[in-house]
Image 1: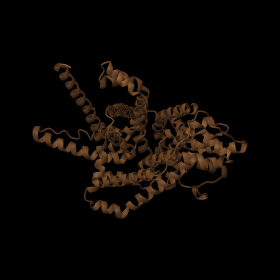
Image 2: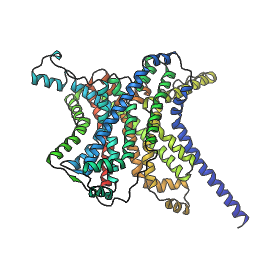
Image 3: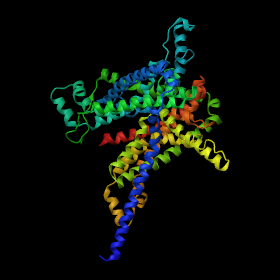
Image 4: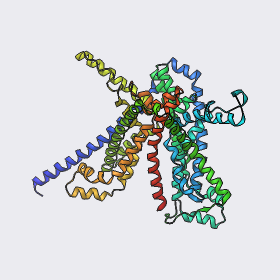
Length: 559
């Protein structure tokens, strides 16, 4: 090799080293940006606990902890019973409508819990259709003639959350049942196990990791809920953070409450890991044939039909029909210019967040593909932890450091140029989109990573042999092949942003409301008719990922 060629080779190696190190720096920088709000909230525990915190600890902190625990326990039991039971019925049993229920049971995912809370309150109140019909049927004339349970209680909040969160457990449990080995189940039958015995001794233990994962997601969403518990008057950490920030004006105390809520989340994650500390779950062979189904008779088939129909009816069909009826019956009042302005705001935020989230996730996942080392993997995991953090916690973690930055920049500009910049970041939609990215980037990362992992590394080598560098390979080879996964990531982030309430309520700029915020405001003022159109729009948008998930599960079932 000549001296000239040797120098060129060294230059090329130096360029490649710097090039790949640049990708590493980029991925770590994105991860640091996403993790900053969470780390800031955690750092608030090192601030001295002031008088406000002592007052909170002596008055309402006990209620926050107790109510949050009751919510977690009640919702956990409900989502496991409904999710696992319905997943087993539609997967392993044959009865009238079982194929239809496979995807209908996912529909409650489209409706946030706070929408159900507002809708059922309107239906079940004294002047609502249910009590009005009862009075007409029985002949009662006043509230003193009968007793009717109030839905606006802790148990009402638990019921609303169960109805919209059980699909998390249903979805993962159903996939686990579909993937179970046919030989294992047939062996249990040959040994004399009836359907109940096969379920409890074979299918349920094998599906335990998926069930626990779905339960963890449901519990995290329970702790994240704000609209339902606030409307029902249940004091939890999320309502406490909001009232401490806006009612008392205590940002540090709100951040410390947020840190306590994060400890709940951390305990939940550790408990899930501990529950599987020594367990291993394997399948003996692949599932090449369809799983054998139990043919249910008339009586059992009817009970199975009722068990599957009630969750989707209560969680989607009844509230959806009620919202549609209110919207159509009062179209001039609900479908006005204000509605279309709110829809525009929500769509702008959702589209921008989805686009940026898709790009960030693509850069991070591809950077890990180029440099599959511990640092890159840690960066991906750090960027993914925001999904486990409630929106109110992220809102606190975003606004406080941004407020410090805005104040420091304003002071610096005043001293140098005599110009006031004001709230340059924290008073704009930049802060709101930033909070959405922190909260939902994990959703996009999962979809993009799954799509990229399906592309063989040999394609990268072939592209480089043709003279393409890593960036050109990404743009010309991977992006076209990953278009489906990238679109999925964008859709999932888009829908989550449309439904997000707690972070939006805290961070939104002045006079910049979204559909979710306006639904909350109208419902708080007992103006549920005006809230019907924005609520219905959120539900209709939420159906998009439900259709996608149903299609994916149908493909898995056909394998």
